[in-house]
Amino acid sequence: MSHADCIFCKIIEGKIPSKKVHEDEEFLAFHDINPAAPVHFLVIPKRHIESMQTLAPEDGPLLGRMMSLIPRLASEQGCRPGPEGGFRLIANSGKEGGQEVGHLHFHVLGGPRPWKI
Ligand code: 5GP
Ligand code: ZN
Image 1 (cartoon, rainbow, N blue to C red):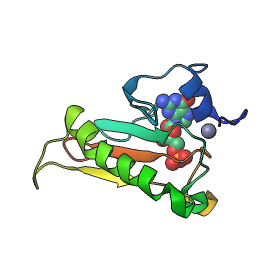
Image 2 (image 1 turned 120 degrees about the vertical axis):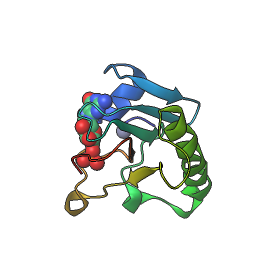
Image 3 (image 1 turned 90 degrees about the horizontal axis):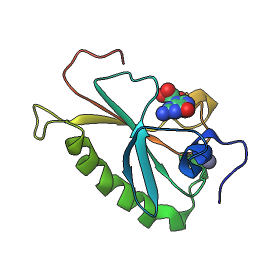
């Protein structure tokens, strides 16, 4: 279900443009508008979930599918495999966790160091 004031729901609906990395029935991945690393995209569920703090026990399988999608997309976006490559996964949750957009999202960051964060 989409939330009227949620910018990520608007991105899912195509009301706000985005540079898509991946889309399927459950998930959308798109480039962060303000990248903090050479590779920086966001992965979101299409269903509006506010944050990691509002996940329900029955959301476990959805989260599992999201976690297995992320390494595949990271490597498609140029993150090198193996211990010399890799990526960073961040989920800011709530105000004190640094979350600015109230729709669950994972930041995937990678590429040659150094980066800003
Ligand atoms: P948060 O701080 O909530 O974890 O991160 C939100 C992220 O969403 C930020 O890195 C910000 O740059 C990104 N962002 C905010 N608005 C938009 C937008 O309209 N389009 C895209 N592609 N990214 C956005
Ligand atoms: Zn939303």
